[in-house]
Amino acid sequence: MDKERIKQLKLQGFLNQKNKDYFSVRVVTNSGNVNGNKMNKLVNIANEYGRGYMGFTSRMCIEIPWIHKDDVDKVKEELIKDGIRTGGTGKKLRPIVACKGTVCQHGNIDTQKIGDEIDREFYGRQFTPHKFKLGIAGCPNNCIKAQLNDLGIMGQRLSKYNEEKCVGCGLCVKACKVNAITKVGNKVVVNREECTNCGKCIDACKLGAMELEKQGAAIFIGGRFGKKYRIGDRLDGIYDVKDINKIVGIVMDYFEQHGECGERFAVMMERIGVDKVKCDIMEKIQNL
Ligand code: SF4
Ligand code: SF4
Ligand code: SF4
Image 1: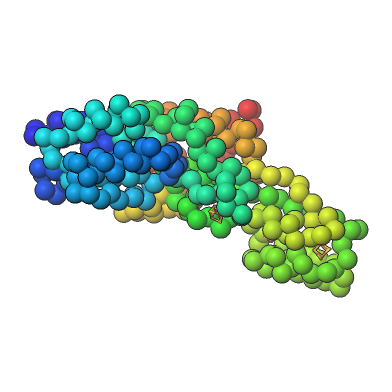
Image 2: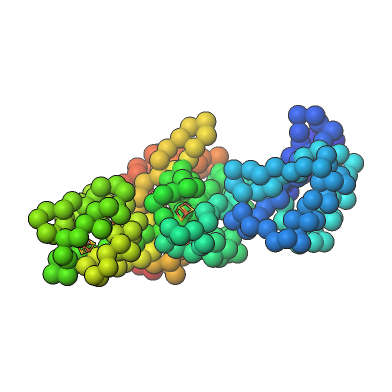
């Protein structure tokens, strides 16, 4: 098979293996979810055209290896017929990674719904200067490591202490796993520098002395992990979930307009200046 065809197939999610006669087909899921019918179809493909197994990737895709080069077109046709997407490569938004915050007891935001909405609006945009990774964590436990993505989203619940209602029972102190609450006499003090906005103290307090001030998402930009790594910078504030798609659009537009071809978002930030990029993006968000 010639190089150009191999390159085109890669863009469509068919990755040439070490053994050049075979391809791995990469199936893009909805933030890690696949319905039963589609999963059955994938099992059939793996049994019929592969070697009867499939693997899960770090970006929640499913790869079926050992598709012979002569079967690639047939497999492609079958997957398209069943509405199964392949891809996950190239200079564009990569498959979205979202944790189970929707059903997880710690989730502060509906990660799967947010992932679906971003996917619908942005997946497949072809014109980012380099790949663009996006991760959504439901809470600061951060199972998907939001800050290691070009754009990270993390569910937040900001508490507000109402001293008058507090009887100093200490339940919130126990609930806070980062020791951000200290008991002082029959009251408590919250260290906002240490607080991760998990919201657990709100649930723990039976008297309503820890109120919900704001629920939403923290946004991180410029993270990456691989040959080189960088922890993403947090934009100030907690953002309404309803604004997330607009924020994703602002960040991706900025990347398209200011990134040089082949440059990751993190590299662009360092070149332009971290504070300037953050300021520019914050300004656009504030004008939403
Ligand atoms: S990041 Fe939080 S909400 Fe998401 S799966 Fe982990 S613990 Fe649950
Ligand atoms: S929101 Fe979480 S981290 Fe912050 S004080 Fe409450 S329990 Fe501690
Ligand atoms: S749980 Fe509520 S009442 Fe008890 S110490 Fe904390 S804020 Fe005060």
